[in-house]
Image (cartoon, rainbow, N blue to C red):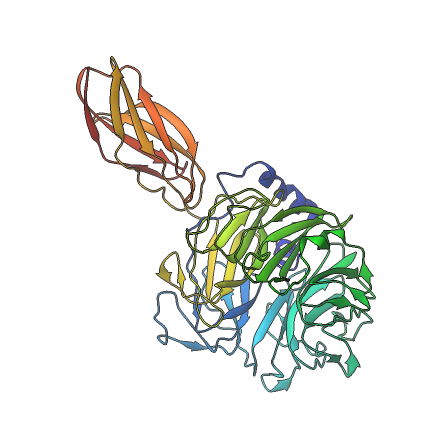
Length: 507
């Protein structure tokens, strides 16, 4: 729950309120999602964004970048120096000029404290403003000040961070913390910065960590084959104080590695009674999807097998948003969707109850160095910040960072085509048209309008997506004789678009 709880704490919404907020997604799966598909204004970066957290009305952003620039500015224009770490306003998307630190290495991960008062940063850096901070540092979210007593000495890259209770869990590629053996996973106290006994002892890199909301257990993801002496590929549930491995039957969702398929966990999101995982596979047809497990029992809840590596997942208002380069969901075990050949779909929405895709279809591109696109995401409760390796969002220039909100009327439905008219029965006109698409909605309402006065003579609703656009027929049961004009109107409840007229002689 590392990406959401700080925002909820700042807003005064506790876990009970969160669970209530999640309920609508159980049934509302075709229309009225929590965010529009139109990106809101946001500054850009000149290189990859790898870490994100939202706290105190600021989005804290880390990565490979050395400069940031306003929305609309071309690469290299109107730049402001920010070395690997920056902050932006969640209301305007503009640079927070008061938060300005100089780091000497890449930031890979950021997490906010439950109350939003601090952010913790992990990466490759060894200095912050000339002060020694070996790959982990903490800052006051309001003042931006470096926290004095959070300064563990970590021997190599910190790739992921999570908070549970008074523990800061972190993972990566390191082998020592404060000179003590901690293979790729460790924890310190958020109170005084001391090294804790927690020691999962992973035998290969840890890419993702998250703690259950009650800190009853901690989840790890990565490329490891063992936790301690126990064989466990890519995902594990461990004790929150010792790091000892716990039973976790849902781990079977990740296939064991073969010579043609290695699927590893890239992101973890715990919310309430469920924990969600994002997987990326190497090899054709290898597991790239998302899956959910029950925190209490460890049982698998659902598994979505869309192909195209998933890098980031974030829960917003009861929906699970994912950043991936999905290209084939035709055989998904959570419900089939778009087939191969429709391109890559880098931003998608899933129903957390069953993993099926929901009504939200914005898109980015993918750029160097990963050619993956979105790599990380975070929320302030009613928005979604997305960072990664992209240079366009919905076809418009926007590098490294974007955000989506619940403000405005959202995307317009595609304008309907001219209807095909027929008059096989006296004074009855049938109008057939292909359904439209809308990046915010699957269910749309269609009206058949007659004449220059646009009299509504028939209404229907239909579902459509960019991969499935069936035709519908609306009937005027009492058409006047003679030449008549008809057009189709489509609405998503907020936006209405009309097509052109077709003409028929009614008999």
